[in-house]
Image 1 (spheres, rainbow, N blue to C red):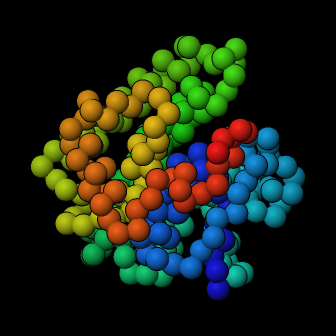
Image 2 (cartoon, rainbow, N blue to C red):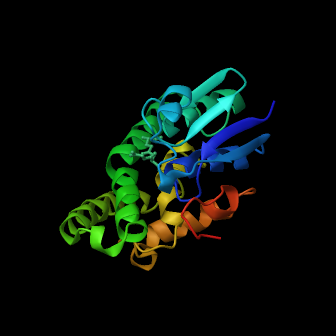
Length: 212
Ligand SMILES: N[C@@H](CCC(=O)N[C@@H](CS)C(=O)NCC(=O)O)C(=O)O
């Protein structure tokens, strides 16, 4: 049964799940959301797909899941991969997924949206500066943690890596200069070397009007 992932290319939260699907070589297809024209804000979206009005939404037969961390956890249950190899590791993976959702991707997603996808007159310099500060502080936590480690948890790639890396593969400017973070840079290169890796725009359809 083909898994359907309701998503869009610009969505780092969706990319976490798309990466897991790709790395696991599962039978899946992206279903594009017309995000920038309010596609996830309609009553139908909220009632049929996600009451939270967010992407991604994962559908496998009768199973519908939302929240990237929950979907990653489900995929680990299904495939036996990326969830951590013992209870201590599993908790550690969960700790980083939660941290990412609160401290890193939460800032990165909004920041990228404000800095790139809103028209100039709607961009608030103060809000961008505030979020950039929070983003830099999250990046510094990650950089310090990765110093001397290949992966965030344990000896191999886990959902902690899939969650934390997602926004860092985008090229649009949002306060992340990869060359300023040597450990993050090497870790991203390691992730991109995994079989099945693709850039978000090569895994999911873009939604930004006019984007290729
Ligand atoms: N914690 C959620 C965050 C999902 C999220 O914020 N998705 C963005 C797109 S990348 C969204 O749908 N935002 C709509 C909104 O905030 O109204 C997850 O990991 O799935």
